[in-house]
Amino acid sequence: MIESLRSASQKSGLPPGSLVHVGDVLEPVSRISVIDYSKENIEEQQIQSVDEILKFKDSETVTWVIIEGLTNVDIVERIGTIFDIHQLVLEDILNTHQRPKFEEYDDHLYIVLKCLLAEDGDFTVSYEQISLLVIKKCVFMFKEKADDLFLPIQQRIRTSTSRFRSLGSDYLTYAILDTIVDQNCVLLDSLDDVITSLEDTLLTAEATQDSLNTIQKLKREVISIRRHVSPVRELLAGMLRSESKLIHERTHIYLRDVFDHAIRVTESIETYRDILSGLLEIYISNVSNKMNEVMKVLTVFASIFIPLTFLAGIYGMNFEYMPELTWKWAYPALWVAFVSIPAVLLVYFKKKKWL
Image (cartoon, rainbow, N blue to C red; front, side, top):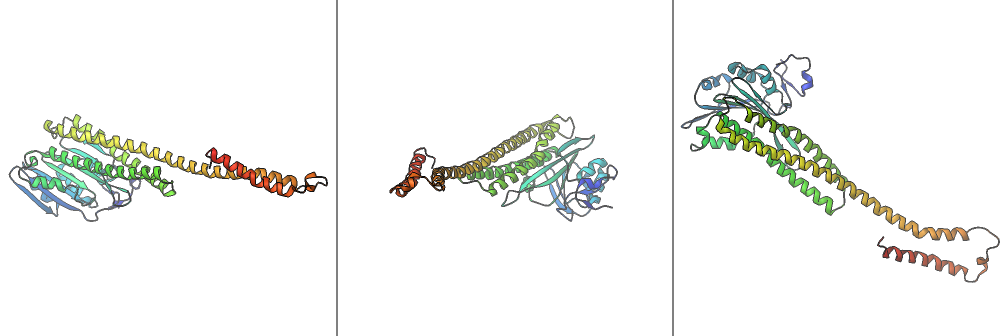
């Protein structure tokens, strides 16, 4: 069996529904965590086998199964067998190059979207695909790596007075989506700080090659972010239109709130893209202005020396009869001209504010 592929193009020739992990290996060993809760009780445990989930399959409690690391294809395949998940859905879970989308089936829902994280220091965005399987009282979450992104949700579940404990799997699904969209908002706030700093640099200092490199890098990042966050609006709109029994009417108001946040993220990305285009134009204008200043200085010097060159050229000719050559004060007069012409021109240029 093929363990892992770097790109989807390497799957060419495999039959539809082939279960192969596609993408970077961010977590070499898969781990399974289970949080099972009701209004009165909560149970958390790490399990070694998917078969241990069977005891939660028909329970009335809400079960949140977190799979961190997608390299173990057997785990995904076994979940599909136990809960009768379509083979194409399982294939999409293992392919980490999916476009965010929402798919509705008779007895389960499939949701996939990207979580955006900004690395410290230089603004470089990393992407983690998160897939959700919503099955009656159970929510499976497939993550590429282990992190603390959803720790606040777990803490809220542990609180006995939290509304989590009395609501179903659809509310848990909403909370996960809300956390991901909010994380995207946090990333946009970081992007806003970087763009503001860059804008101040371009307006108050000379444009440098580093500024151009930063603008181009940010433009690439913004295009990539837009490609991953824009479909989230369509995803949430599909959930709001869904008539599935797995999404209760009471959850729609919360989903609409996430939808509003997703719209804000998308609009912000469009705004930042326009700002970066404007910054690129500012950079080009700064470079042009700098070149114009250089050309202006060269033109001023050329204007000063052209009359002097003209005089030197005339009196440097080897004609036999040049009356000025016999004048007693011809040489001093020529030096007076050489000094006075540049002086007059410099005063004129200063008056015109060309210097």
